[in-house]
Length: 402
Length: 229
Image (cartoon, rainbow over all chains, first blue to last red; front, side, top):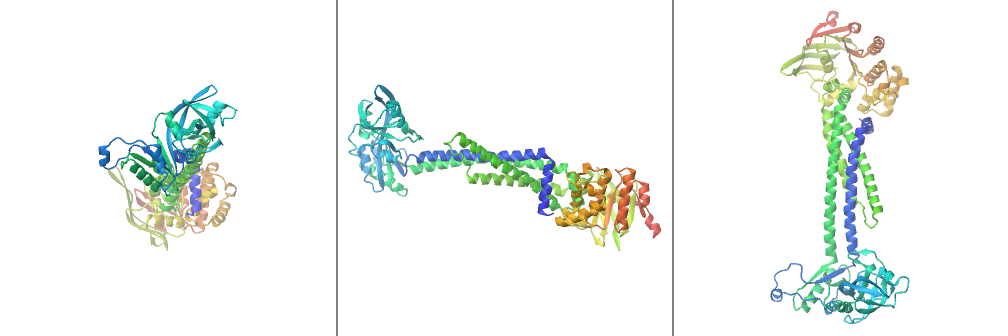
């Protein structure tokens, strides 16, 4: 039998039982659509988190006080167990490291800002002039914090766009004196709105010089030191150099933790990638179920068409011809289902993107190909058994079934 | 040369504990161009004989030579190839494929044999005209009368131009008038040299054949060909 004839024969046979055909196509379509939509969700989550982390800044190395990682036994820690705090001078020392471009010490806490009788609670970050470029923030108005001695508590502040609106309304904010905690500060700049960043919203942020923040919160320690490496390749060197400098300054004690943004990113990437894979696996089960349904439909078709199979054999059809005709029918059901499911899934992902614009719900290519491939493979695989059964029918018995 | 030579054919079925001998020690010879009626009561083995002749069934013992070639030892696919080109079937209940049109049903053996579409169209058109079905080419079987359906089935059986036509009660589902038409069609084919074997209960139909075989309990009871020879 010619290929075109086989396909036409299978198509007509499938069209002969519209309800059964439609149901198995639907089952296959739902399976493939599930793969597309679920992997779009999983991969969207991955990209969302990775994107959020990237917005922290580029080529970042973050220094935290205290040692959280596990290390070998160190005699120094055995004698003096209390970790030293990070100080402004520690941060300043990091600027000597050759692989480091910029350093921003960081201190944070909540306080109040008031102006003209209005008062609200805000998150206050103490840092230096380089905080803004390191975090990829931009200024909408005014100028950066003064880039002078880090230990000088200049009475100036940068404020977020929302705080400006709430405190000053339509009046100009630049140059005004506001109260932050128990200090009077001059507003020198307004941060450009960047939307929600991981854990820090620039719209509701007040940035003051690090020494001022320490005075405000009555502490002389740092919460973090943000270090920007000179390039992506320099990140490991920057990490090692920062660690070496701090160890030296802390009398040989390695009492800080240095994490690289890359490591954090890679961890999240791996974690959420695995999640996507797991979700795809679950969706694949529905594909297998759809495959079994196709098999069922084909088995029913073989039973219902027993007389026809007997006739075809009497008319000179070889076992191979009959096997191919039934396989082609199963393949058509799954191919049609897979195509429909693909369109359905992409429509679903599109609807998700429309509903949640910040969430990049796009099914990855590998998932789409795997979904379509699995659909076709299961359809064919589960079509083999019914096709073989049809081909093996005894023509006399089959003809008598009429 | 003999078209069909059966010698020592045995065919038995197991029904529960008992073995039924549908055919026992059957020797038979038919020459090309013969018109043979196979008669006998139900269960006499005439359908089994027809299935055997049509290579739809295999004997337990004995040999079957079709056109001088031993066909009992062929593989199922080789037998299918023989059925495709050498044997045409006409059934009591027509056995048309309901979702195919009359023209497609007639073309089915050629489609299965992989004959090119242009050649198929040419042959189907001629067959439709020959069998008076030109106006019915696009009709599905359920839109055709019984006589038309059997004409479609006969057109299908002859479309590969086989030398042997096997008909199982070809008039069984038809009224007298259309039955006669169908028999005339088959006899015309025989007149053109096609060997015709008809299985029937109907004594008048059987009497029309030039040679009658009467079967009983799987054995040949009577062969009018013996007397002539």
